[in-house]
Image 1 (cartoon, each protein chain N blue to C red):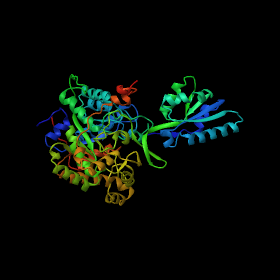
Image 2 (image 1 turned 180 degrees about the vertical axis):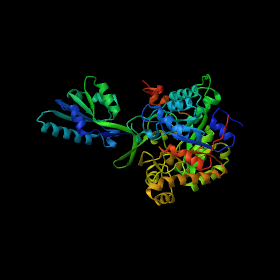
Image 3 (image 1 turned 30 degrees about the vertical axis):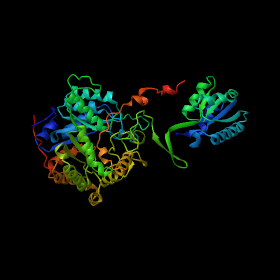
Image 4 (image 1 turned 60 degrees about the vertical axis):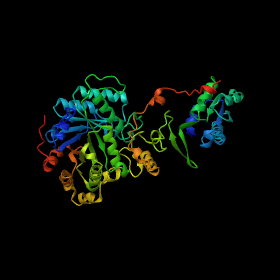
Length: 222
Length: 310
C-alpha cells in the first residue's frame, strides 16, 4: 500500500486559517490502513480545526467526508455536491488522491493533509516499512526477493557497500542493511552462486528518471 | 613487463615491486597550494597519491581538479570517484577530463552516505554502483567506446582500482565480493585500514585459495593512530572498522605525549609483518591530516627509496 503520515497541525492551520469553510476529505483505501487519512483521522483533524477556530472566535465550517477512493474519478464525482459547498478541501488521501481531487475540482483549492511517504507494509501495529520505489523494472528475482533499490540507502545493485556493520546500514543502527538481508536470503535458498553474478547497469528510463509514467493496457481500454 | 596503461603505479606493480600509495584530502576552499603542499611532503616516498572525492560527504575542492594540480606538478595522481554525486553522463565526462590530462589511475567507490556530510538534505545519485563504475571505465578504455556505443576518440588509459573492506559484514561474502570486483575488471585494490592483521590475513588466504591474488594487486591499507582516543573513535564510531582491543590497550598503555609515536610504531610493524605475507603487493598509507608522517613510516618500514620505472 501507499504509506502516508499526517502533516503537523500547525502547517495545516497555516494553510487554512483564513477560510470560511473547509471540507476534510479522507480516503478509505491505503491511508485508512496506515491510519493516516481514513475516517478516523478525518474526524480527529476536523475536531482539532473546529477547536482552533472556536478559540480564534471564528465561525469557520469544518465538514467531513471519506471517499471510497480519491484516486478514482468515479468516487470523486459522487462527492461533487459536498466538495462544491465548501471553500477549500483538505485531502487526507495520498499524493495521488490529493491530485485527482484537484484535477476533478479545478476551481477548488486543495490542501494536502498528509505527507505521502512510500510503498510499503506494516511490520506491526503502528510501524510501516518501505518495500518498493516503483522503478518500473523489477529486480527481485535476482536479489532473493529483497529490493536493493528501495531498501539500500545507496540503492547499490551489487552490494553491500563498505558501511554494512552487524547487519545494519551505515546511516543508522535502526536500518537493516538490505544486502545483509539479500545474502541471508540467498544462503537460505541455496543460491549463493547467484551472488557473484554482476547485476548490470540498470535501465532507469522506466523509473522516475524517464519522466512521468503511464501504463496502458489496450485490451481493457474503453 | 605487461602493462595495459602508462600508469606509473601499474608499472611499479608489474615490475614486481611492492607499491606505496598514500592519500590527500583536498581543502575546503579553492587554494590549490594546500594540496600541492601535502603532495610535496610525501611525493618522494610514494608511487602515487589518491585524491579523495568529497570524503565523508563533506564538500571540498573537487578530486579531478586536485589531481590535475598534482599531475602538472609532476606527481602521479589516483582519481577517486564516488557514485554518490554523478550520473553516468557526468562520470564518463569526468573520466575523459582526467584522461585529457593523462591521469592514468582511478579508484571506483560508492562513497559515504550524504547524511554524514554538510549537505545532509541533498539528493544522492547512485545511477550506478562501484562495481558498475569499474565495468564502465574498463569498457571505455578497452573497447574505446562510450556506454551508448559510440566510439571515443583517444580513449582513456586508466589503471582501474577499487576499495575493499575485509572487515565489513557479512564476512562470508568478503571474498566472493572481491571475486565479483575482479570479474567486473578491477586491477588493483586498496583495502580499508587494517588493524586486525589476523583477520586481514585470513581474508587474503581465502582469496588466495580461490586463485584471486594472481588476478589483482592487493595494496594493504594502513592508518597510523595518533591517539588512544582516535583508536577508540575508529573502533566504535566508524562503520566497518575493526580495531582489536589489544591495539587500543597498547596505545592507551603509553603516556599521552608518546601515543603518536606508538601509533607510528604499530603502523610500521604492521607493514613489516604484511610485507612478508604472500599476495600483498603494496601498501596504501592513509595518514589522515597527518601526511607529514608518511615519509617516516615508509622509511622505517623499509620501503624507501621508491623504485624508478619508465
